[in-house]
Length: 130
Length: 177
Image (cartoon, rainbow over all chains, first blue to last red; front, side):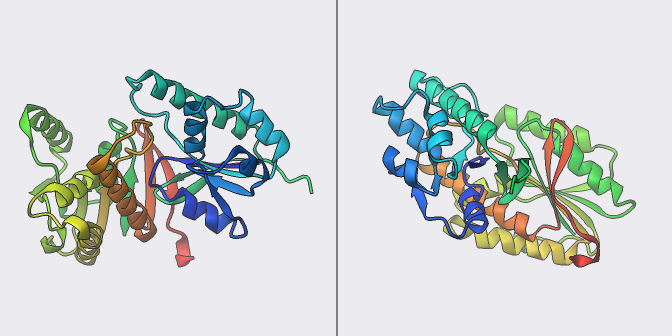
């Protein structure tokens, strides 16, 4: 697993594409859970979480299952947790969920990047085991 | 040399930017203020910045749009604050560049770099919250995001200031590598 995070409009997807030109990217705004389990990369992953929450189908163990069933997935997700606590209860839960899920993905990821102004910084990198 | 400085609200990026300019040594220091003083809160904010700059030898130029039309002394040390205001002005003011703001701002920055010896630009990180903004606010975030990314590519140095601590995101390599 590899995770690329950062605020909106920072060039995360361009950075991810340059890093992995071979990947066909799924769009988290429209892709299905089945596609996610088979895909090589997904962007707007936070939007996938939001949709699953709205439909009441968000797997409780989403992060665990992704790490287990599609460990090569590259996940691009928006940082949504740094603003004021939202007034709306659903937004609060969504914001928290994105944070918790991405934290779990980060823990299981080989590499984690953060992109600011189009510049990526590797926050975590595990030595390759060959 | 072009230095871009980003960070959240109240992160100490202004003070850091001023220090960077002072570190260049004696010279003609120019502060380009892009924020229009709206109401009491705006006036207070500007007052705080003025106090921060007092005694540091900056001459202040207020410029809300049309950066490209601004002349600064040759070889000067220029601090522009803040790109987030300039983008908002170009976007929402009747005399702003509107749709063409990215090109307009880049041209302005190029012209500054051609005149000044050092240019520091302060911008703002407003991209990491979950509020589902709509319409103009999203367009504004998108525009500032595009300006920031383009400037970061052009800049020799990009620094994120976190509670007064500079985190170097991009550095000029000696020997031009």
